[in-house]
Image (cartoon, rainbow, N blue to C red; front, side):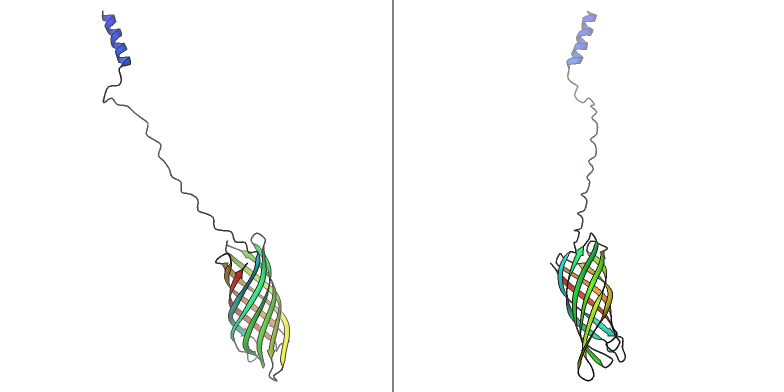
Length: 193
């Protein structure tokens, strides 16, 4: 009988559900780690294409009895972006109202080649050089004009796909024009297509 009782007790324990209040250990859930999405990359600016714009600033003439004054003008050009290296060409016209020696300077025209590098996604530094043409009126009242050369450097920043602004320094040397050496420091605004 003892044997029967032990067998019945063992069978009952195996088929009986767990008692209320019994400890059941469950593994703790793995902590959820949220990974912030990577920031969106800045748009890469392609400097390729034509542009037109306006410029203005201060012109200084290095000649006897020189006169410094403001200038205003317009420019048009084309740039090609070779993956951060930019090559281009530009025509520019400036209206002057200044004296160099005994000559009143009226017009300054430039044809330049430009080489630049985009050192951020939206900012380019560049150098340029080319030909300059200077027109004016001498003390006798006759019109005169001469060719020379121009060289300089600048920086330009793209604010939108179609608009950029910058600063530029240029040195113009027209030896036959009363030894006129004209420096310009100007701000530029360009509209790009």
